[in-house]
Image 1 (cartoon, rainbow over the protein chains, first blue to last red):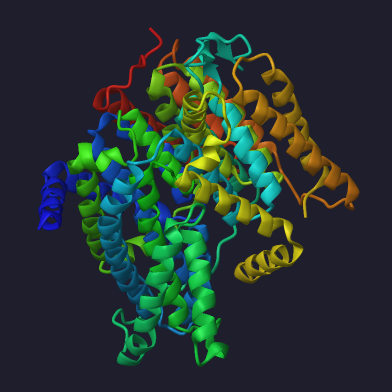
Image 2 (image 1 turned 180 degrees about the horizontal axis):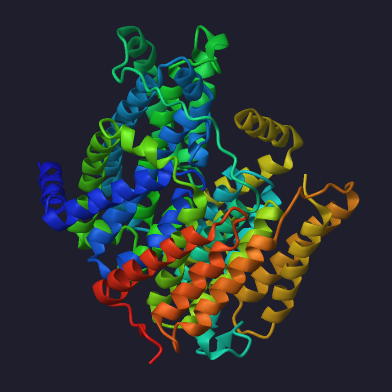
Length: 502
Length: 133
């Protein structure tokens, strides 16, 4: 009954008024941001990261997590009603969801999306609760060599599963690693890559990079062209789905949940990949594939469940191994570090209230989202009419004050400019900023453990191959690299992504 | 695929980073920078061997305006205080949108400045002077 005990502990933590409040604020803010096209969850988390420094650690994590899955929910509302996905993971929802809205079944599409997401969120949270302790006790036996292999594996896997060119993604990871090395070297005490600037001695702050790359760069590229908005389908119709619609979607919800939970754990996976995969699964399994793209409810139910499940289960590697699987998780890691928590296997043992409180709050947050989204849908629809030109100055202000407040100095704000421009150029060059952030966050971990491992083995690099877990991880990494080099598989990957982008 | 110009930029920046890193101590920076140079070079070569493909339309005016707005905030915040720098940030920043209207800018700047001062400076205790004096 130890499992029930810790779960009770978690709920006791999550049910304190403060935590409940921040869970609600997070979910609400997330939905708000998700509904508004043009600002994604990554940017939101980056902008609000500094605000959470003023909160107690658990409340801060609960709120950030709430923003993340709230945004997944909110994105689908926009996708269904306006045919404009609020985030990448809602792109596939727009295909069939918008068609349903045009047929006057927007209500049903929204309800199925919300119910499916709630179910998926519940399952994935249970998955996290079950897998967490098991994985982390396994990970406790990891030595420095295993951590090095795990970092390499995580970084490479993330680049392979990411969209776009793999070479560029690896380049981005390297750039991130280099950026992570700026500042005083812990071992030797000498400065590296500071270009003689004393302000850089402490390294570049994580928030600065995140806000610059995702916040400022996003605003700049959104403002580039005049707003393009779809036609709003204002008639929502009856909310409750018909019996027939239920029958068509429950299996899709189950499959979507399974796909999402598994893919979310993979590095580089998470919500977007899950949604795309679930859509193609549904299309393949369906007896009436010709209905897809013309308002098939399974095409809404599957991806929506999958993206929510993926969002929840991407917490698994972060909370158990301390390895973030995508850029949002990298930001969660940054938030934890700033609060003095070292993410990794020891969190569950040493701070059980933190882990279980977060797990419990995720479930509560999902339940809250159901309430926020369905009865209040009218408010969100009205919100869609607020023009971007009024919104973005506020976002800009939040970015600047947030960054300033980290160290109370203007220099950090000036650094944001640099990363904002960098982020903009990277967007133009179609390089993803996500791998860069991953590299930046994992850089110090990789370096410390690499040094430690080589110190223990007295400089013998064979240590990585001799330890079994480490060897297996490296073998998988090598296998992945090999598949990339083989042209046939490369073509297959390209096709898969092209199909998913259609 | 990718615009040649953008790629050149990308690789070029990597190279600069790489050579600067060699002065630092430690083993990993050198290795990673070496990798960066290699990948940068590879992408550059690949870009040259392919036909030129345009990056697509771009409009960097908003970016430049944003940079000016944020730079102003960065330099004024510590000395001139919150109110002055925020108004600068919001007014200049608002110009980045082609459709901005003066009346809207004025109202939203006023509201956001008051809101920001209360929430961040008084509420959350961010250490920034409010007035220039």
